[in-house]
Length: 178
Length: 178
Image 1 (spheres, each protein chain N blue to C red):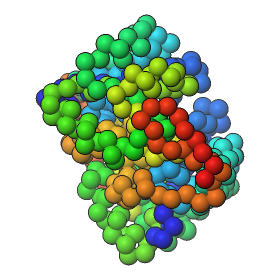
Image 2: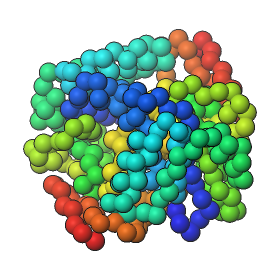
Image 3: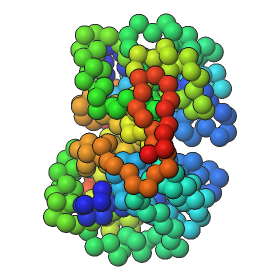
């Protein structure tokens, strides 16, 4: 979140059609919950466009990238690589290490798979992390992980360059120009 | 989570095809992160089947219901009704009230919309709650909300009647018969 080392999210694997909304939700969740950038694979340019559009309207800074070589993003990453998987170690046991990495100035990359993730990602990851060892949703896992990493500070993030802002309301909807 | 008053999740609105995976992920996230039951509308029986199948294999107790009258679930609910919406009040300001309701023995119903939610739901809800006022994902909002409601206790939940169990691993996958 701006003043810290970069937190990025890589969406690995994307089946056009079937994964469109999940991939878009991964990107929007990364943006809303404090990551600095999302990286999509080559087939997810539609999701990238949607997340860019939301950033244009609701503010940033937030980076959206499409890469032909998502695995290079992993292999070239200089800080901890965290693969979210239901087979991994409990997030509650790992979150302290991840916070310490950020505090030490190391950028953190979260890898969120769509289709089956190949074994080399498990091996390359510094942490394979599970938000419960139950099957549920990569979007849910990413959300809980980011909320725990930032300890709720991401909920108070300020947005720059928005042309609309939602004002919290007990009932109803209020949207203003900031 | 078993010894507390019921926490249920109602998925309101479902467009077959377009919403299938999101609706399934709402149900699986509800199950994995400590809710006791999910209620789907009449068009989401496919998602209901998937969540039931996961519960059969990975354990429960967890209730899966399909109703013809989802709004009756709201109007007849005896405890707080919490509508998750990006237009609502910050979760960090409401979570204390929700925990107090559970501690007072009141069941809590979370309402998660797919398509546009009609205004009567905003009015009937005791709380309209936002996990940030940014557009992202109802699955992410539900996940963060449940994790905060249960203060992480849901991550240590025990499962009953599972025929498979994932053992947390630093690298790789391990699944056993419990």
